[in-house]
Image (tube, rainbow, N blue to C red; front, side):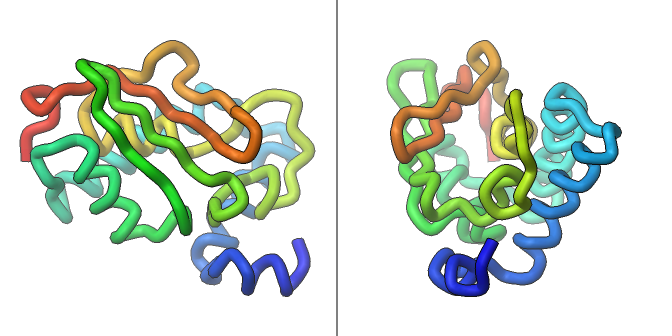
Length: 148
């Protein structure tokens, strides 16, 4: 990752630390996606306990991004019981692949677990898919499943 890309994305030292740590643990053979999802779910729950969260799941995602600044551009929409979070991958600041430099054959993204734990919502399947320049996280959520 070049200095220009770091500045362009607004990557703070802590963002880089998280992305690079995930990548390094993976390269050392210590990290699988299931571990990342579980650990990040616990982190997300702790963040909700400490900092609170809005009742509306879509607003809660935006609030969490305001706290952590993990992406420059994202959108969260509740469609029935599905919360769809669309992240412009060119603005993601914690991607282990792009920011951390990990060569990956499977997902390592911390976002599905983090959002699941923060919202108290289950992931739909693997919880993450890539479509062009976006990463999409889908969760089973409703206003009643995500109390403040």
